[in-house]
Length: 226
Ligand SMILES: [Cu+2]
Image (cartoon, rainbow, N blue to C red; front, side, top):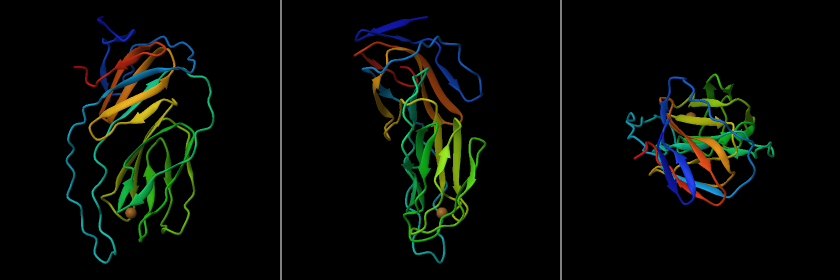
């Protein structure tokens, strides 16, 4: 095992696992956390993604715009004291795309699915993490709010527009962030302790690395490690 010191913090660089096959990482001792001042920042390599050309839908007032560029989601796993109920967030449909196309939320978060287009959408998911079907609705209609109470991946689709793809990543931590299109991220206000930092790129590519956080220190963590 190799140790790399930086700004007073230590980062365990062994044990990086690109999972996707369901294997669990080696057990990491995780003490109960306290609210803190640690920071982790870095970059996740986001592979280019091939997408089918956007279709043209006849007899519609709008045609699809470009989807959100591929991004990753970074989150810190560990044992945290119970926090407040997560606030409601929105995942809209705009220009015939899910907006955003990737949403990361804490378990227990209620999500709105507002239709921001001037045509019908029909959002649904057959995912094991959450199965639902909002039916057809327009901009001026309010579909039910869905609360995601299980951790995992929720693949979103629209029954009317087959090109529409969305993902909700439900995590069991209050510390998470979606990267920008360049893969950059910065998690702030992190507690001190030993945790596992994960970077979700796709269902087939999830990086993880044990990290040790100390108060006021900033860790640099890139995936994959350079
Ligand atoms: Cu649609």
